[in-house]
Length: 289
Image (cartoon, rainbow, N blue to C red; front, side, top):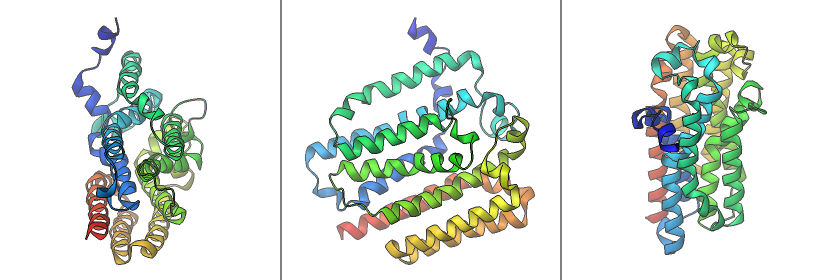
């Protein structure tokens, strides 16, 4: 019976709803969190096995969870959103039951790992799961309650870094750096919500972007990126300034040409992957050289 339910969703549909272009958003921060803890070649075999296992978790299952729940609870909004209909895909309600089962099947194999990790990692993972689900799901549905929409979304993308950091056994975390990451994610979330403003208004969904409007939301994004770059400079030096310039220019281009904002938005995954990879390898070589 379960097999028949799952077959309502093809592998192609499952991969598509997991947003492969966004996979590195949670996996990337997980990897950066590991690097922030120190030289990754000094950990014992058990720790390395945990890191690899959770790497697989944040690669696909975690994305199936957060975006699958999003697709289920956002259907009424998505059908009125050109970004979702054309750029992404809208999953019909007759497949939602199958999607819940798929999410469960992807998550359950990793459940035993929860009992093998230290308490800080457990707490960080629970925070990720809680925000990942209730960003979209009722009764909280944070995405329709600004500023919880921005806060929950930022935590979704920053908490994997905490999981990676704590899995290594290191608990001496720099909370200012975490705050800088959250501020950066505030900007990313708000920028991604701007193309949804009209559809969200039509569906009665309130977000920080709908409250601010396009121009004010973009200025908010610029402020977030600049503050994040300033905090990043304290830890990373001029590489953080370079990142601030890149994201600042994108926002300024958007402010001066709002008609093309969606086009700029489509480049964001590539830019995020490139900057994330640059950050990871910068930290990697800094630790091992």
